[in-house]
Image 1: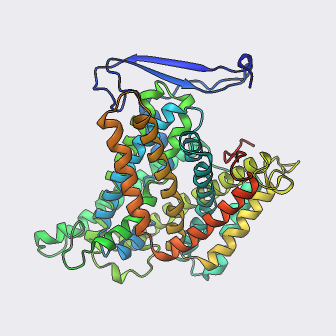
Image 2 (image 1 turned 90 degrees about the horizontal axis):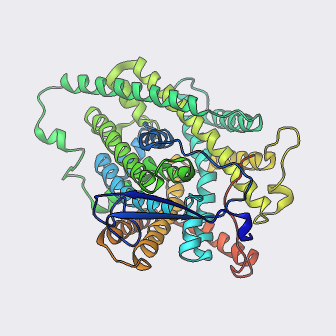
Image 3 (image 1 turned 90 degrees about the vertical axis):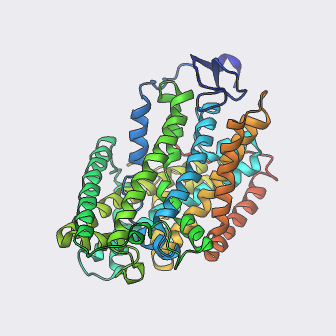
Length: 483
């Protein structure tokens, strides 16, 4: 793009009394006055987004993206894999995501008009590795509506005992139909749902406290067992549970896509990302701790996938059982349909750019102006996957791809903010290294089936990428598009 057709630099300058290289520091670690140079190309004559979002605005948006009830659908699976150490798994995962969140915030500061692991890795490390991160991201977009289909079907069976295959077909048809008709949740709807979830969570916690108070005299070890049970503790099992518990935090990276709408993005994107991980982590730990006090023996859950719903029923009776079941069902419907639309847009963006066959993936329906082919394709994949995959395997596969993206962002932050910085600081070194090590360890802890299926997906992607890009000499875009 010629220089006359772009805005090359936006410089935001602010004063700070904090130590250099911290959350508000620049890459070079210069104390006092900080220059955050956002370099990107924007065609002249286009409308620019208004910087109207403050710190707590984007924190609230991040909580909505992740969802306050995020650990509830995972509770039974993590309990089984971690041999009861759900709280410990949630907290370990929180630290990994906190460090990764710092890396996302710093990369958003360096590339404010981007917001994806594909861009960060491709720009900072190498386009080939960026492609790997993007290909992993594509798998996550497809898997999200798939695991929502599975969970919704299991939850619906708690309302009407219709066979699972019937419910699976129903929810795939529902998600696909909503997206073909462009019916999707608004920001106001999401905010209302977040408040409703908060009320339900409060009701569950109150019921759990009342239930525990009715139990006979309990030993102190009863209250510490959710953190550490010497009879069942195994480092490898806790790591396996943690590798799944990370799904609790998936979505926090969406904050980085708001860089062009945030006041003082140098500071607020990074702080908001960290705060969202911290708030969700604390809320999630409290939710699963209360559940484990009510139902300490996870081997007796009637259904592993909807275990938290049964915990609510034990603590608060049939009414709370149905309220929690319905709340999580509605949340999963929103997540599943939204995930299918996001995946369809991503495939459309790749098709439009020629990364995928344009006649199929880059086509837009003339009547509805949506990528109909992509919506139907993801719907077909979800329908087939609902009969092949379990919820647990789908979640593990989704985390397989997420960990690759997270490791890539941490490595990008390490290279950009430490290796290539004029001044080396420990605050620019430690978070990305810690985030990378934790994510890598959890990636290795994923069960073998997830690593096998995930590796097969990567091999197919790399072979396709080598062919499509003539050995990665041509770029492949993974960004989606507004339809």
